[in-house]
Image (tube, rainbow, N blue to C red):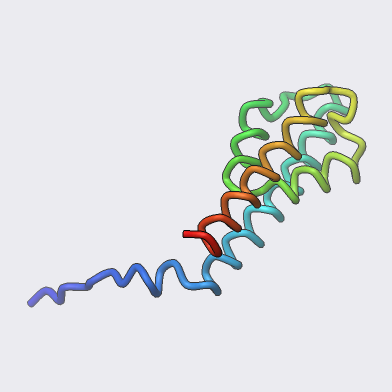
Length: 102
């Protein structure tokens, strides 16, 4: 006999799970900036810039920005210097709006 499992979205999107997600995605963002910097130094295949922006847009902005400045990677590219913080600020404003004004 199969047991049916129901998904409780309130538990799935609990504060704890959301915080764990943001911790993971930001650590991942920091890590991929480090990997890309190392690959750039060795002249190897690189992580596509599109991927770096996707990770930032998925909530990893703090990690990618921290990695960018920690490893001095992509700091000369205006798309990154403006793009990463812009995406991150928009996400923070959106979170504040939905948390307090919705």
